[in-house]
Image (cartoon, rainbow, N blue to C red; front, side):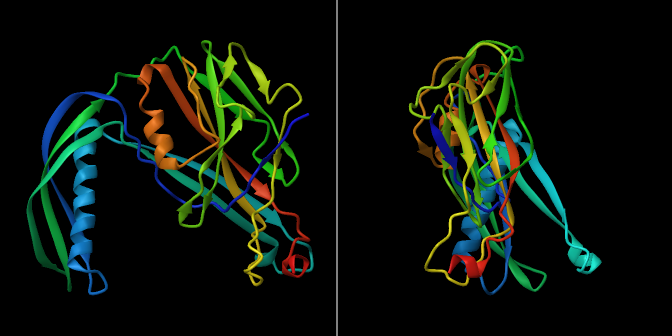
Length: 289
């Protein structure tokens, strides 16, 4: 029996910007603005204004798709605590922002600094060339993925049910944001090879005696005053392709997005599923020391 641990991290709100293989090219002129105060330099403000203009150029040509994963977990305390202490809820949320085009060229044509409500604003105008994505999704090629439940305790196993509309190849990742930075995606299935699982009918995974067990929150021994949270969110990300695609054991979120959209849109589907991890109540600071 193969045992594979899912490492656990804290959740954070983040965005995922995806590029893709492209064909048609469109020229566009856009302006970006960033308002700033004395704590921000002109150079930094204008860099941020330029980044906004570049994003706006892609949005204007191909549009933007925004999707949110949310999970609200509430718990009840004991009767000897106050009503405020007995009931507490934690909202975990991630925003997925997908830009299906690619910025090929960007040339700044004008930069100005203007006053704005006691501060200043950097205004950047640029000319950009944006490439449109490779085709449209195939509505007949799809995959439904469901988890057996939304909340898990450390040491419990995750099971997922997959139901394809056509035969294809599946790879499953675990992803967990950590504070304001992003942890890499960890490949869960398949366990021992980068080649994806061949899927042709509805089934429950993992199979062949493999288990996906929830692991604990990573603890830095040098931070003796740091106490892990009682609960945090993680994600399972499923990638389903018409042809087999090899994936590494770990991949950064940005590299994941680039590789995902090197494939024609008709030949790929991907989705994310949020779940909550509950820490054992007795795991407190004094236990860790």
